[in-house]
Amino acid sequence: MIGRLNHVAIAVPDLNSAMAMYRETLGADVAEPFDQPEHGVTVVFITLPNTKIELIHPLGDDSPINNFLAKNPDGGIHHMCYEVGDIIAARDQLIANGARVLGNGEPKIGAHGKPVLFLHPKDFNGTLIELEQV
Image 1 (cartoon, one colour):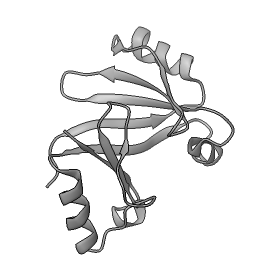
Image 2 (cartoon, one colour):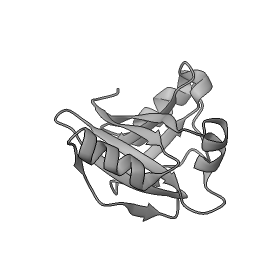
Image 3 (tube, rainbow, N blue to C red):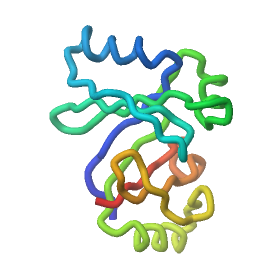
């Protein structure tokens, strides 16, 4: 069902500092930030030869990332994103196998402009999983 690793998302308390560290210290290709109000985050993608890193920073006081950063003030890995060919078929198969889909179970449009769903971390060894249709 799952395909390649699309990205690893890292929640950061200071977006500019994190961007500078990846760009200047690690020499990575760091894109410009953009807001995703429907998800409550500002996002920056870092392109690597085999995948991407997604830096996520709270956008507003109601951002779900605020809770994560309250528990992890230095930031940290927030989720892993895997590609799927058909997000509805993947969702239905996961639910049939007992996995919990977060939210109302309907895909939202993610940072790449493609449908995404999130899976409950308690069902996946404590890791929040994002599925993105490609």
